[in-house]
Image (cartoon, rainbow, N blue to C red; front, side):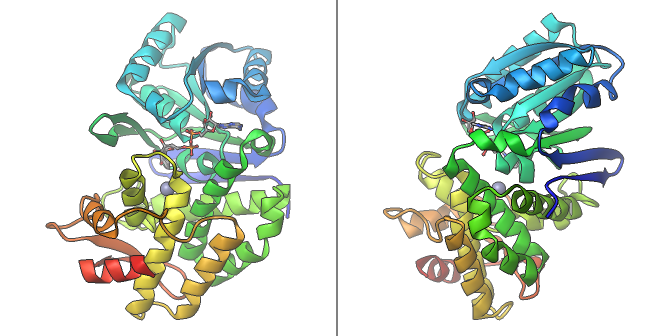
Length: 363
Ligand SMILES: NC(=O)c1ccc[n+]([C@@H]2O[C@H](COP(=O)([O-])OP(=O)(O)OC[C@H]3O[C@@H](n4cnc5c(N)ncnc54)[C@H](O)[C@@H]3O)[C@@H](O)[C@H]2O)c1
Ligand SMILES: [Zn+2]
């Protein structure tokens, strides 16, 4: 499989170029320069990424292209996706002299992408955003679709804006420094997208799991491409997430978010929680004859082969997980609604009662 691709994503009225390849960090300068008329830009990253060679590579590419980047490093970790960090970034934008003709370049995982994206969305009512994702999750998911957000002590992603990046540049080489657990967690979103597409994609993922575990460039590129195509397909036509197809991307997330919240966002990664959520959704779908037992088995086997969990961490109270899912944003009139997969790909949104949910959670 070729280890590079380029897609033109149409999120009307916006367009976004997505490019993935080996060594693309060297192109962030020339590609960003083509989007702006001012040399002033701000490169935002976190301390984890700043400790790798990627930050210096991106900064020097921007300089070589004639741009004048100001680099801002926030502490790694979800706690930096805060109003305090946003305030710091806006002040840095002001100090850099960033105008509407400049750009914000977000180099990092979804945390940096959401934070820098939100600041770009709100700076002078919107400045060009370039996403340079360095985690598999960000390449597959958070860097595209235009959702930007901050967390509050009251909850995750409570403050946010839609702001499409003009360019997403994913360098496969950046993944070389990503810890294995973070890499595997990103694969959960790929499994979700395979379920949404078709059975062949799921089977392929299971068969490719040894190559993916070895981070074979061609297979990783194929997995990211699948995820980007499926996400773009669901975002297009429902860009602002108004109850259309974009909702289906929530497959596995009703349970996943509840598991994350129950663990206090510690000890379990988002992708790991979503993996368990995908199995729960498949079991409920099977009980309702939306799919056969074989889809549950294939989901389970694929996640297992990719080194992902297929159940919530032990010690969590099922009743509390069930109660948490009632707070999900898809709820209607206090009733739980979940995305359930269909036998031949695709999914739908269904009401699920406590008994049905608890039975699937128990396995
Ligand atoms: N906007 C969206 O549509 C969307 C979608 C999904 C998730 N998200 C958000 O994404 C965030 C999670 O993103 P994430 O999983 O990428 O986590 P993250 O951004 O917190 O990154 C995880 C860790 O990996 C480190 N890291 C990043 N790239 C690295 C690299 N190449 N080498 C070594 N270390 C590296 C980071 O420093 C950090 O410590 C959450 O805030 C979530 O809400 C947003
Ligand atoms: Zn997710």
